[in-house]
Length: 263
Image (cartoon, rainbow, N blue to C red):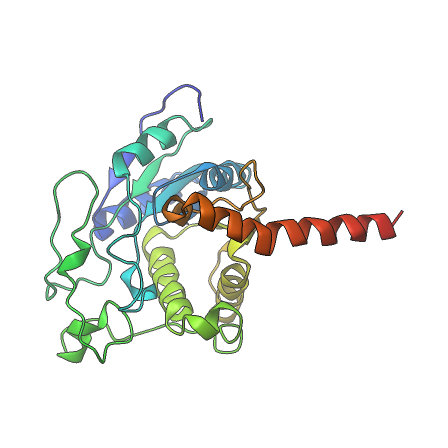
């Protein structure tokens, strides 16, 4: 990821983000949104490049969404490098106009999550979750203080990843709805690596009449064939080899056999 560095405006306040978007719209500009949870890699950069084909201005959101994590999942250890992310975005050809980096999209003046300074990091461990909570934002909800409205795509979220992660797609649908309402994009780009997620968001936009075009971008893979993912940083070399042997190598064999049958 090299090239001329471009300045990136960082916005953390929801009202300021809305003001920026409305100002750009008043000038006749179209806005493309690329939602991310940070720790960016070339897969994310490909989404930004795709967004450039469809919009005048690009907003990249960086927000680790607690609503899609259950209490037993890796919210507190999800990889993060905000300063590194900004450097990568500054080097993207064509640039990124705004990074939307909210501190907590579930904070309504009642939660205990605090800003950890200007680095873009949020103290995720401040979220206290009771044993009966189903996601990492519901401790406040149980006391009647916090977030209790969720967006679900009922049929499509069942099965596949939804079987093992029952709150995941509810959290994704809700946070994407929030981002759409705040940023108000014309276009939003998602990776097809998370295929079920992409289809759920596509259906949600249709069913709720969002005036947003949802674009799916092709998977970007590392040299060994593993799909790029921020969480890959946690894989040991042995774990990576296991994933390759279980998924990537059999897939490549099947793909080869398919193309041979078409000759």
